[in-house]
Image 1 (tube, one colour):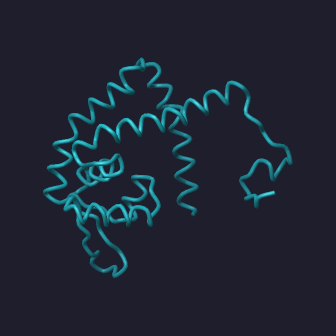
Image 2 (cartoon, rainbow, N blue to C red):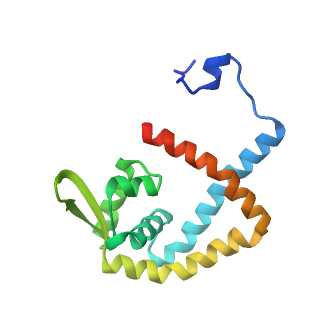
Length: 167
């Protein structure tokens, strides 16, 4: 039996809470959607020389004050591990999309900074990307369904962020 943490429901009651048919269908639909949509968006960003991960980082930096964020903040904003983000930033830096700057007063801290080339890349890709998001996701949902998704995912995202902050 794997090591179980304090939040593990099996550890408390000793019973596995198996998914009902409805829960299983909802879970699998979510997983399939996330994978298929990400693959499709990634495919449609390729002509711009970007991946979904590149695009998400460029968006966060383009919206940040001074077009820069501490690496730890950027990792949190993009839900990536610090290690994975560091490798991603290294690749993007080599392509001239971003650069690293030292944090004054914090010898270990680094900023990721959007370059002019990175800003041009996001400005070029954004119209097509937004259209892709609409065509492959938003246009298939009613405003009521979007409200349900937004309200349903909100608490889940918050709980996962709390867990991430503890890690």
